[in-house]
Length: 141
Image (cartoon, rainbow, N blue to C red):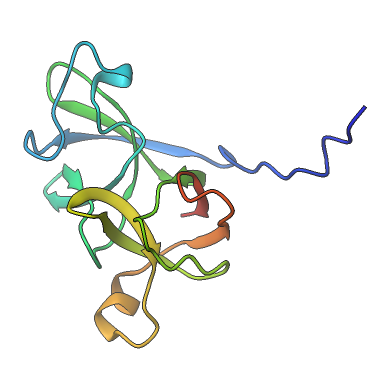
């Protein structure tokens, strides 16, 4: 039998969830989508009082979209260990803080903050813990 300790899995540790309003533009409700939106699982940012949208390049990451309800409210994991997707050619240095990224022209992805960009260093947060799966980069916020 394989030793389960050989493969680390920290996802979900110290998870903190909060409720926000969706922008109803980059994030929309869909009764047929898992979790209530095609955007579930993507990275989000804060855009206004209690309002979220999908992340864009170089922006601060609030957390991971977990679900969207028909009334326009969403549950977001804002702290703890989570898996977020990275942009297609994103830099993903283990130990680096993260900012938002695009995957082509699609919002909702992450990358490592650029160390030579002062604005990104101010906005970045968290820590990349594992980058072996670009569709599920393990981060701690």
